[in-house]
Amino acid sequence: MTIRKAVVDDAVGVATVHVRSWQSAYRGIMPEEFLDQISIDARAEHWSSAIPSGNVWVALSEGDVVGFAAAGPSRDSDASFELYAIYFLPSAWGNGQAQPLAIEALGDERDVVVWVLEDNHRARSFYARLGFVADGVTKSEVVGTVELTEIRYRLRR
Image 1: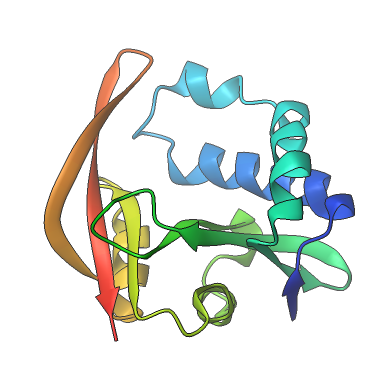
Image 2: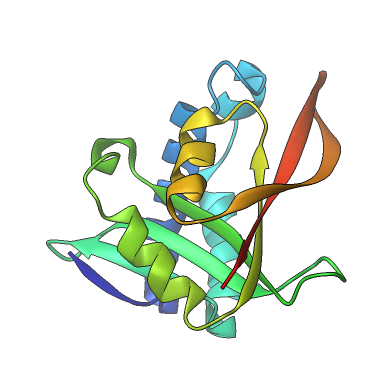
């Protein structure tokens, strides 16, 4: 596996990982009709404009994007840095690639937050293994007809 900063040419690969991981990880958590209509093309447009910020990293296997992470200044006023996203193709889950990618994306940041769906137990376990702990802050979001709770995890080092 190779980890490097993403380039605009990675946008379709990042979008594919994003969509396929959501469709697998969030099945049973988010409405199926929402997951089924997520567009790789629309996500690729988003990532094409986000990647030049320099805050996106990719994990490559045999030259193909199999995972990505996005991180940067926190959107929360009481934290300095945020892990916005980390996703892998379902076929790459459990192969040990996520931790090195997260470490690369976090760099030397000392106070990091990440938001995770309350019902996403796989992700919550992953963040706990990295040293993140739930800090008691939550928020709700409605997706389709379903209200989802997000829990904020924090890493202080």
